[in-house]
Length: 341
Image 1 (spheres, helix red, strand yellow):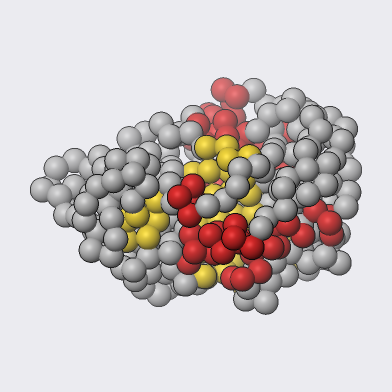
Image 2: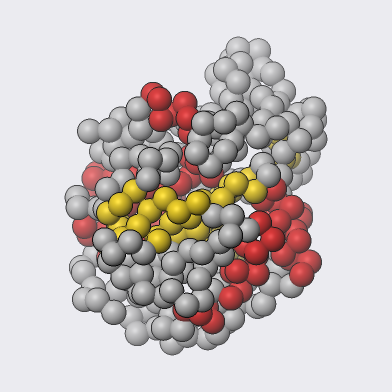
């Protein structure tokens, strides 16, 4: 493992993150597309993504309220009366986007429901989960930590975006942080429920490289990804460099340099590779799964507090903004990103 860097004070982190660049109007427009290249029309109205209890707009027609009800990701849903937008599953301001609320203008939709599966890794010197800290400072809806819960249709339907952290089935004793407990093996029923959630409009990002046995570590996540043509390699486990080569895509806009450390190359049969390190190793693949989207990232370092110490040299904050925007349904919670500097 590489030498760890000191943590950045949160106040400075937030100040630097607030100046993170954003995409141009053309990039914003193509980000709302439904295909992985961002140029096609958004998902059809049959897609459903979760909203929290009482906020949801139900079924294909987009009407009704109720617990965990879905909102059609390709349909504007219930039309409002031209009033200010609020988090209620309706297109109140009649602009074609449901729940596009971002009071602080920081690029994170205030209505977005995000969850994490698994545990934060052991390599953070201060034990910090900067992704959660960063997100919680920008959204009134903190990320929900699902941990080792069993995945069901009812549980998943509450969320629009899920980030998978360490979900390996091996216990791992961390050197700098807490021990990673073994995650349960995803069952066929869980795999099927997860596939339904994604194909109906859910967005998922996966991370990897938490342990020294990456081949065994990624097996459980690969179970979830396999039905949708996404995966990690079990042999190419030497992703260990700055990622500097980025294919034009909404996820990569404004991103020039992100560090990886003992990562695993994404290798899905349906995945499109869009980021590479200096040696040409794949760092990021994206996959369109019916109405949903998958981003398979080959490392986990950008979830740690130490990585943000180089925020002036790496575009970690910008990358997360791109990820959340691209994974969100095309007509739900789409907000403007801060301008590129």
